[in-house]
Length: 186
Image (cartoon, rainbow, N blue to C red; front, top):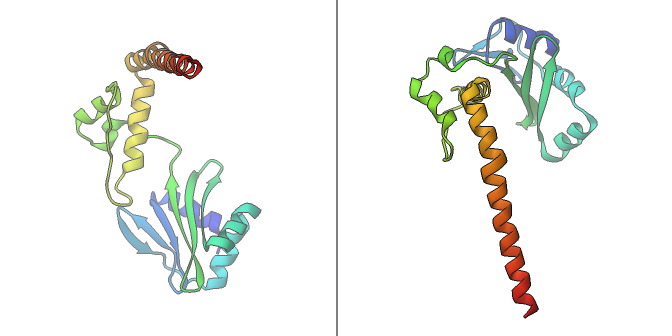
């Protein structure tokens, strides 16, 4: 079995994840459910032969030291994948999460309209939480896309970042530093 072909199949089926676990056929996460492929269960050697060749020497060293490594892997024209390879019960196991090239618009995600206004807030903290596969990264990417394509927010953020924050902060830092130097001299 070939890892590249499996990952292309993941993309074709619009699955979010590929799980490679010894003793089980490859599993795809489709709409939040793990669906086994109709193939023979994977043997530990098969998984090793699939995932170890895609690692750099540094990643291999890290895998040997920590028994786990996080990687990024891309297939030109298909998608990028976040991967995690780890030792489980004495054998290598791997999980790959598909990261599509196309970032959806906020409206396409069926999110509340109020959410899009968060990207225009001048300050504060917004937490996007949820279980694995619930769309946290997709939501943040869509909000970032919305902000970067909005001329109104781009103008405001560039004005804010260039004039107000760095100048006032550096000016405060310079005043504080000069006061402390004066005190140390006396």
